[in-house]
Length: 310
View: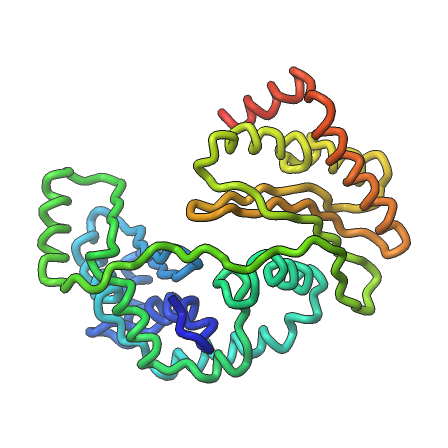
């Protein structure tokens, strides 16, 4: 939902809701009030979901929740706190090419999703510098309202009393425009070998392709398969092959990330020395070939099933 050229707006909105005060208290005063009440409060805006949460004592719930709800409904969005956040993000932009893994993940995002889709989008100096308090307020108002709201509560309380209190709390909160469906990527993934040259003692190798949707009928089978292949740490085949037997990498494995609205991605990964990158890649592809052509053992399947159940 970020407007074009405003990459980073969503994340900064979540952070400023929490750090920028509410209608009654400024940022520092609100922090002190929550600390005094031993209330742990957060707010975040992610790729497809936004949330705010409070964890506090039953004895002071009414007071703590009142300040919390005011923060969520009418955040102050303090200008000085925005500048602090902006400087932190800009500092991170300066150093993000120092980390080979960050580079690899960013470039993989471009290849999988395209630079225009939110999963492949990255912040830039220009986009962060363009974000204003008015941008953040408009983004907050678009998302945080009862039309998009689900409330979950757990703890020491009477259900009927809690429901009544929550209904009263949101009764005067106007319902805004409902959030639409999550957009599917339109980018066409092109298989190939892509690399980013960097002077470093290690290489980060990511091997990936588009995956499946969460509700695919084979999703559970695929999850167990991936655990056997590389998703279960030291018990997985890729880790045993690349790390344990050959000692080529400290970190090696695989992940299947499903999505709700469109297919997710499969990715195998390892980090090794440049001279051993080709051999490690061969070992990983050998494991791909083996799991496609040979049935997994009953013991392997059982271990992963029990792990998933537990």
